[in-house]
Amino acid sequence: MQAAYYEGEKKIRIGSCVRQQPGHGEVEIKVAYAGICGTDMHVYHGNMDNRVTKPHIMGHEMSGVVSSVGEGVTDFQVGDKVTVMPLDPCGECPACSDGCSHICHKLNFMGIETSGAFQAYWTVPARTLHRLPDELSFEFGALIEPLAVACHDVRMGKVVPGEYAVVLGGGPIGTLIALVAREAGAKVVVSEINPYRIQLLQELGFETCNPIEQDLADFVEKATNSRGADIVFEVTSSVPGAEVMTKLPRVRGRIVVVGIFSKPVPVDLHRFFWRELQLIGARVYESEDFEKAIQLAASGKLPLDRIITEVFPLEQIEKGFSLMESGGSVMKVLVKCNG
Image (cartoon, rainbow, N blue to C red; front, side):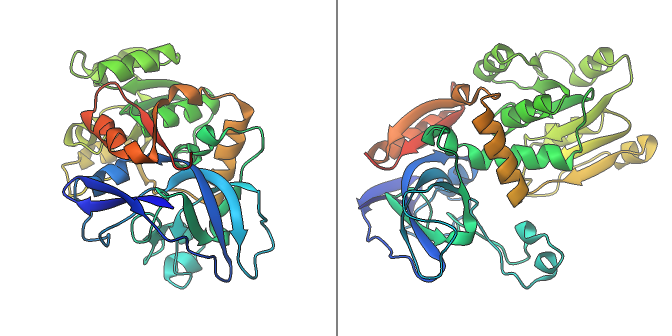
């Protein structure tokens, strides 16, 4: 079978790969589609070479069909339509003992510490599987993982109907957060500077603000009659994002930090004191977020087709990475892993 190997320095090679027969408690999946995400781009740029063993098979946003089951697997059988929650916790650390295995102290992320989904067949622990309904397309099935991120963020933020929410960053995750928050009943405005994404967000019915052209804090103050936003999602992982996020919430408003900051950045802690703000960290997802994402995707309420910009066959995966790297007219790129 074929797989895409990251070899360092933005080089990906398509080569043969031996199918790994599932062992006890494992299943083999015939991969249909896999998405290229921000983490994959970090690997591609060499920023995670300390965590991957080259040559490395990336990919963790996927959909497929169970093609083989190992001993001891009773919940799934050949032909089941599935996606994978790509977390491999230790099960023994304090976080796991406290029921927070998604933030395990020794968490291995499948597709980073282990081989991922950019291959024709992928063998994984059966406990990582979530069943997909027949009516959900394989393309949308490959969006369940990032949609679960959004569901987790909105759940951690405790969004309720009627609230005013600001999403900083209108990329794939930011847009999915906006969609899930709106589905939860919030009025959502998205801060974004990319013209393509601004237009797409507006076509999806969202109010937008380009902070380069208009002061975002002033925009929110006017929109809320000086009250401020109920909740802010920081998805940009940028210094300007961290700077402005404290200027937007109302008294006792919430800020959910979704973006990954690789190093400390300045944050206005006086503002937290002055308005009794709440800061919430949100990392990946839990099983209930995957189930919520599957339910939302299957309901047809979310315009997931607008999130997918392009689909490339596995043999042309480098075109997908190049398109994502361009940062222009693109949201989500999928890779078709089987012909």
